[in-house]
Amino acid sequence: MAKIKYVIKRSGAIVPFKKERIMNAIYRAAVAVGGRDKNRAEFLADEVIKILESKYNENDKPNIEEIQDIVEKVLIENGHAKVAKEYILYRDERNKKRKEAARVASEASENIPWAKIWHVLDWAVSHNLHKVELLNERIKNGEFPHIVHESEAAYEDDLNMAAEMIIDRINNLKMVFVSGPSSSGKTTTTIKLEQRLKKKGLSFVPLNVDHYFFDLELHPKDEFGDYDFETPQALDLELINQHLKLLSEGKEVKIPYYDFKEGKRYLNQTPMQLKKGEILLIDSLHGLYPQFSKDIPDNLKFKLYLEPLLQMKGVDGKYIQWTDIRMIRRMLRDSVHRAYNPKQTLEHWHYVRASELRNIIPYSNTADFIINSAMPYEIALYKPKLLDSFKEWKEEYKGNPLREDAFVRSERIYNMLNSVEGVLDDSPVPQDSVLREFIGGSILKY
Image (tube, rainbow, N blue to C red; front, side):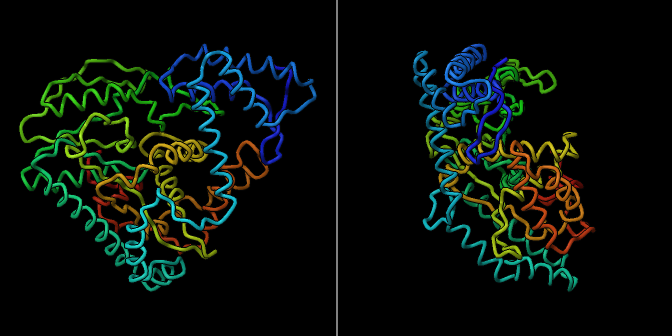
């Protein structure tokens, strides 16, 4: 056991020192460059602790920056230059994001689809749905069913446009990617898109990339011991790319099978081959990640990106954050379909968010088309479902330096939901709505 008991975070908070956090950070950096040796990561973490204990006494409290400097030194001195580079890059990215968050952004970000957002905002203004106060007013006037109809129609228009664009390229197309961050509505959108294309006589073959996960024991963990399924490196990207290339050439491959109960992958299980006129349909978080399909020419791919691009200001004058909408969706879906406590979703979300900011959102502008999956009425349905829970969580996490992220999100979402006119009756929501993927009651088969 390390003699150092506490460390100082950047915020000044003092938290318990844990070797596992160093080991997990090293292992995550190794995974990013293709390494998966947990024993080596633990050895390197022990080397870091040896240096720390030689520099500090038992009552000393080193800060996070000092520890990270030592990690970089140990990695380089032990011949892990690539891992050190990845660790340094990740550390630098986090520092930049902290600085950006500390000031009001004044420059356009390349990660944000500005043209699409303008279109969504223009729609919201024309329907009096760009402010929570206006949404509340329309709900009080008995217009909730009409708001549902307007919102669903806008989403369906996006789907129709995507289908038309695919049909225009059908002569050369081999695969369609439906991508986007967690709980953006990829599964429902994939099903509804396929329905449209089948009407045009097109045939699609789904590829479930979940079967390409590495064994659970090879997954990196976060500082709280949670396995990370969000990073693209959790998938066997080389095998995916190899199979996509073979399938695009009309050759047969054998898809692996991943047993989630065992946390184990079995190779060469299910034969797959694209017949003439068939197109591969891929629903994946990381469909736009370059290494996912690096050997497939762009003219053979159609890339679709989803995000709930809600353009609505809260009573505080700030826009409601898309990530908050998606986290609520995931809480509701996971609690119903995966027996996952919503509180666990909240505690894990910092990990989800970090991965998507690094591995998903930066590639959104490489998509051929962007679908807005936000439903302006959805926050009204969320209030009676989760308001009390967020009130409890913000009190529980207040002052806990290890759960600072969970506290900030809980407080922000509680304030937002508390300002919304809640709606209990979800019967106006169509049974095939993208929202049914999360609140339940869908007639679609997932």
